[in-house]
Image 1 (cartoon, rainbow, N blue to C red):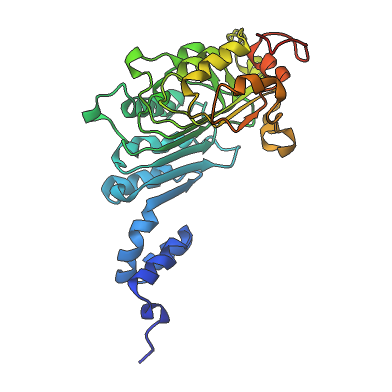
Image 2: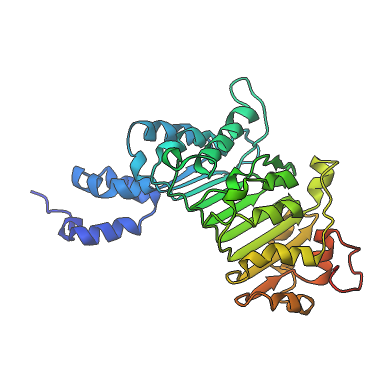
Length: 333
């Protein structure tokens, strides 16, 4: 008679610790070992779903029948830019994940047409879902009420960008962290009802590799109660590729500061950058100016502000459209 495997000399507490520090494939292997380990491992196996390439449909079919209540973190990554696979394929099952805390949709080719699916059917489903999760929906019928972190990264190597069209994503009440990449943000995308002002828990807002209209940002910043971090990475190249009549920013540093002032007691970090190169955001050497003296008098209005990246005269003038790059003056006021 063979000896009992050494793993069974461990207490359940230690076994759980082993499971917690194991990666996805290791957890799957443990779950297949025996009934007892399957019971211990299954909650951790489905807690985090890291979906690659075209596996979204398979994941959706699984949670249709079981395990939906176990899922808390979902990441869909399409890292092969040659495939016409959308991360939005996972969206139809999201409403069933009542304990979902974090959602990331990353990569893929979001704008395409085939006989079976197209941009309207899948990306349209995403915006419908976000509306149901937002303040537009009555509390009793709102979905994903535990969602705390949301990342929508639809940056593509062909330089295309997607339009938001709706403000739903900015008025999800319990959301703490929101990151958007590869979008055309227009002024009307920040429109929402007045009674939603200062009604969200958003603490960190990042809009990167996007064409970012300042008037939209000014409106969006009315929604959070207490924003801590703001990052704007404005990509001018999307103007040339995607939209010939986008609204040009025509604002001043005074307008910029006024939009931030509702968060004067909580704002800890601001970052602004302007570029024509998508890759600039991935290069540490291109981090914009830190704590520029020209912004110091404005920073003094924010008691807990620690860092202001790229808030120098040139960058803000470039982003806000208030003058030529490198012009002298008082920050475009």
